[in-house]
Amino acid sequence: MEESVIFQWSVFRSLLAILQWWGFNVTVIIMNKWIFQKLDFKFPLTVSCIHFICSSIGAYVVIKVLKIKPLIVVEPEDRWRRIFPMSFVFCINIVLGNVSLRFIPVSFMQTIKSFTPATTVVLQWLVWRKYFDWRIWASLVPIVGGILLTSVTELSFNMFGFCAALFGCLATSTKTILAESLLHGYKFDSINTVYYMAPLATMILGLPAILVEGSGVINWFYTHEAVWSSLIIILSSGLLAFCLNFSIFYVIHSTTAVTFNVAGNLKVAFAVLISWMIFRNPISVMNAVGCAITLVGCTFYGYVRHLLSQQPPPPGTPKTPRNRMELLPLVNDKLDDKV
Image 1 (spheres, rainbow, N blue to C red):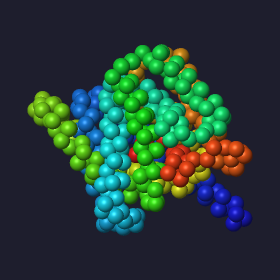
Image 2 (image 1 turned 90 degrees about the horizontal axis):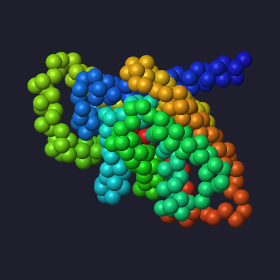
Image 3 (image 1 turned 90 degrees about the vertical axis):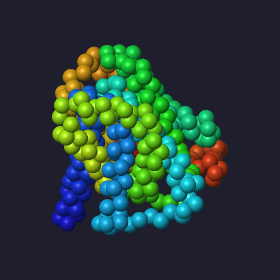
Image 4 (image 1 turned 180 degrees about the horizontal axis):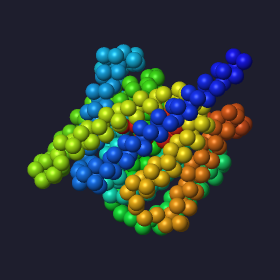
């Protein structure tokens, strides 16, 4: 009886964790698109900077004031030698995501972001000479095929937004690879990651945002009709962006790797559906088929990766030296949602 109650509570806890993660993630994406499209606040650098500032304040409050999470102490020299390069890539990753969202529909952007497993594997193979089982390569075929079909049939295609999303995948993959080498020895959770990286990302992005978008933001203040209500929405998106980091921490500790992978791909489908219901961007049948193929491919890739992780490496498998470690993503390829 007790085992049954424990199992039911575990299932309920996992479901609750997944639902709140979906809620925060989809809400942040939709709010960002709403800011760019409906509020006419077409300044992705400024929006990213606001998110970094909100996340910096939120992480400080959680760790230093409320003490919900213990602080992972980082040596001062490591903050510049390890954390700063990570923060730079982290910053580029978030900015490119918001830039792509500024120019292309949520459905198209989310589908392209699903290309991240492929870019991660290719980068590790090219740069780190990492060995991959043939089943990993085979699992990437539907992902690449689905992305190609979606791109060719996208009715709202924009080359600049497409390139920003594609380079965002490369930035996410680079961040994943660097995390294993630069952060080796530090067991960061999502909140401590934000605590250290968000302030540095704000410092990196602050000046470019002012120089590139400053005059446009000032002009928006003078010409926009509902400035204060719009500012509330923009700041709320920053607050929810921080809450998303907390929700990621919760869902990781409440689900298995397989459940997290499947939930991540269903989350993309959920985001595509909700965004279409709100923004009504045109989606052709073949475009929807391409998106579905991509998501099925991502799920299959996650399953294959999990299956291989449970098996000992076959005899004769090339072993990666310690300074070229096993560079599979820390938890899941879809953790680029973090702000």
